[in-house]
Figure: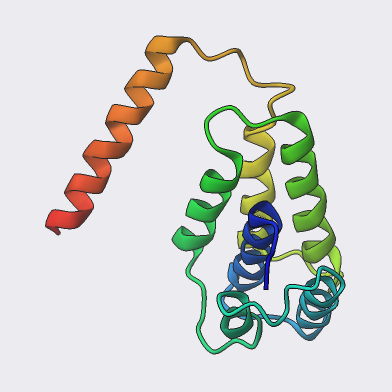
Length: 140
């Protein structure tokens, strides 16, 4: 099966967003299965276990997937696609949990249309910070 990597990432993020409050609501489950089926990705070996809730997705993992999807300089189109997809999922059960609201707020902070341009020095500094955090995580 050949799939679009960014579509696969987006579906993973949606599954993570559904888990962000610790449980997947029936409406969220229905939404996820519909989107995965429409995208012809429901049977993907990486997506299928997540979609069928064979393992929970932790909030940190979801946020990491968001960062990987958007990268350091996201396009407005990629950002909007992600924001719209997560919003549709979050609002699918007509109940916005605190963690879901936090996710949407954090996403709004990443909107490239409102973010100040990043300097090369800031980008370099962020890269060093990520490496340092990763090193600390590996040691603990």
